[in-house]
Structure formats: structure tokens, C-alpha cells
Image 1 (cartoon, rainbow, N blue to C red):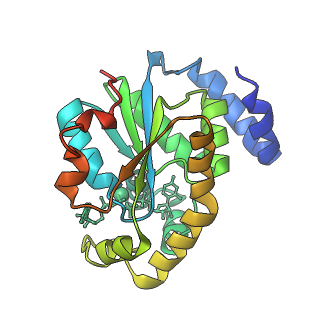
Image 2: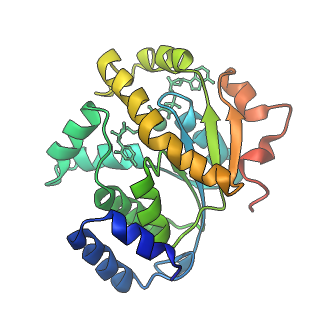
Image 3: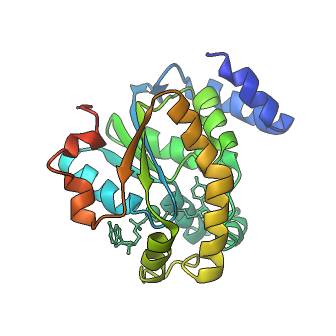
Length: 225
Ligand SMILES: Nc1ncnc2c1ncn2[C@@H]1O[C@H](COP(=O)(O)OP(=O)(O)OP(=O)(O)O)[C@@H](O)[C@H]1O
Ligand SMILES: O=c1ccn([C@@H]2O[C@H](COP(=O)(O)O)[C@@H](O)[C@H]2O)c(=O)[nH]1
Ligand SMILES: [Mg+2]
């Protein structure tokens, strides 16, 4: 295990540290191994409405990754009638961030179930605690991080026009999500930037151009096969 566990443990309440340590033991997690599989992970970050989900579908279609959207997993958890459903629903409507142990457990289970070794994780980690816990306790580092850079004006326009019945696609929640993105999620991107792991994508352009970018689609996978 890398030294990061000590740092991330300091960020966490004691019962949470205990919970994660038990899970590590149960799942026999080693460096970039989960459930006996060696996995490669790309994180996809960017503001609400920057087009992460849209481009992840393209990446799946063209490059054979499994797409895991943390937000979709949380919405599925609400719809499953789970005991945490009401709490997750309230947090999403407030544009806040769900506790790490809930999101990471859902991601872990999805990776273990997934019949693949390449995962593109969309919308996670959302804050420094998410990042530190995932990397140190789950012990998987991303190969790199895609950052979808888009203006708030354009993201707001897209979200208000999304029309998929999401409870957070309203102007009050959108404004709260922008604030949370700047205060909590940008520091995660800055952390990876300081390690030279971020590929910045100009996400303001129309969707086909974001993916094609003069035919350089491979920027999305950095040659991972
Ligand atoms: N490049 C683009 N230009 C215009 N509209 C776009 C573009 N990319 C995505 N959209 C549209 O904007 C809306 C938001 O896109 P998408 O759901 O992919 O964003 P997201 O980053 O996953 O958002 P969230 O964080 O809220 O899940 C959708 O209606 C989508 O069709
Ligand atoms: O890691 C995560 C991912 C998402 N959330 C909550 O869900 C909503 C919607 O997420 P999308 O990625 O935009 O679908 C987000 O605003 C958070 O409230 C989370 O808490 N943690
Ligand atoms: Mg999305």
C-alpha cells in the first residue's frame, strides 16, 4: 500500500477508515487490482453539462471502455429503493456531494461486476476526499484524467435544455452545482494537473467536433488498448 493512505485516513472520520480497511481486506485489493482483475481507469471530470456523458458514449463505442457514471450509479441507487436512497436524492437536489463511502462502494461493485479491464469513470472524484480515499484505500490510480473545459454560460444553456427529467436540471440546483464544482472539484483537477496527468479538452465546441478534434480521437484514450 502506498503512503497516501495515511494522508487520506487523516481526512476521514475513524469509523469510515475502519470500514474501508475492512473492505480492502475482503476484496483483496492490490495495486491497480480489484476483485482479482488488473484494471485501467480514466477519470473524466468537468463542470455540470460540460458534455462528459455525451463523449463517454463515443469513447465506449469507439474504444471499448466500460463507462461508469458516478451520478448514474447514485440515481440507480435511489431508484432501487435502497435505504440510502432518500438521503442521496436530497443531496443531489441540493447539488452537494454524496459521502465517499456510498459512491466508492457503488463504483467498486460496478468494476468488480464489469467484464472488462478498461473503465472510464465519469463525474468522480468530486472532491479531494473522494480522490484520496479512492486512490489510497482502493489503491487504484487513474492512467490519466480528462478535463472537459466549458464556460458556465454554455453549461447552463445545455443543462436547461437537457430535458431528461433530472431533478437537478433546474436553475437553482445548477447554480449550486457550479459553486460546488469550483470550490470542491476544481482542486481535484489541479491536484492531477500538478502531477502532469490532465488532458484538457475544449468542450465548448459542438459535440462531434469535441470528439473528432481534427481526427485526434486518440487523445481520449492516450493509446490505452
Ligand atoms: N458539445 C456540445 N454542444 C452542445 N450540446 C452538448 C454538447 N455536449 C453535450 N451536449 C448536450 O448538453 C447536455 C448535457 O450533456 P451531458 O449530459 O453529456 O453533460 P455532463 O457533463 O454529463 O453533465 P452532468 O455533469 O450534469 O451529468 C445534453 O443535453 C447533451 O446532449
Ligand atoms: O461522485 C459523485 C458523482 C455525483 N454526485 C452527485 O450526483 C449529482 C449528479 O452527478 P452527475 O455526474 O452530474 O450525473 C451531482 O451533482 C452530485 O450531487 C456525487 O455526489 N458524487
Ligand atoms: Mg453526466
